[in-house]
Length: 367
Image (cartoon, rainbow, N blue to C red):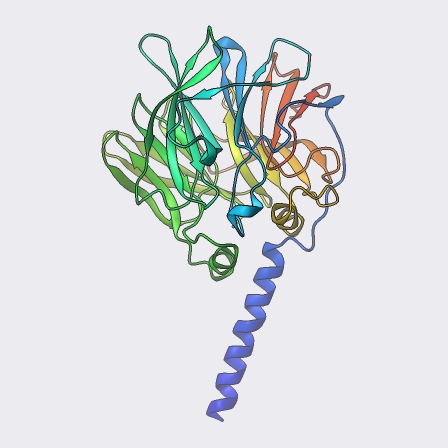
């Protein structure tokens, strides 16, 4: 009788585990293609456009390309890591490759998340999450020379708390918040972490000298601060939710306000002047995972979804408008999006393919 009871309990746990895994992989979901207007592939970043950093007063955007993520072997990384510049005032639909000078190890520069801080003299300081071919991690700080159109290396920061950095928010000339989307360093370990729910990621604050854990034992993908720097938005991508936290930089602490379900895997965020959050999402995880495994295979692609999210004042509710949905043939595995030209244009980034520039010819304020 005892063994029968144990068997029933274990069987129930196994069924729950299987059901949870199937739901997490989105086997029950599909996308229906639609676009907000005419869309065009942006030339230049062929190895991805994982993150954008918009400099609004300059009407430019930096693009990270060539991200390395949980590689099976260093020999599998056959591409270069690069940073591009996109002029939002032109309609050439071409991004310009920007030289990155004086790196400590140029061959191990594979950029991921981006952020910037405006220095007292007006210089744009770029903070870059960087991985190597062997999946070692660092934050590389670069200053942009606008006249020469080049990025100059300032310093490279390594820390034991940067266990698997993904996104970054500059909070000062030498300080930043960085997200860890997990703790393991292999595909197999990552899968176990996802399925078990024992996450080893979170958010870390680096004050310029020392790192501090802000959110622990979580999964944190894209992160963004509100324009008044008081509210932190975190993509808990594995749960398909967005966590909203009150951020106190002096106390180096957060207080959770709410967690909103999106029912899609939102990647990175951009907050526009009207405080809408724009995000590129992965609506069907199983297809994105296959694409991640071999992004050079043109027959493998991940569906894309672009959302504009507007939160209530108390952050307990959110209104979501789907701007674009695509099965992956036009834009594969979208990661981020942002509007410009008074909302008439939108730029969309991807994990391993070229970015997409679309006209927006549909109304977005529906109610």
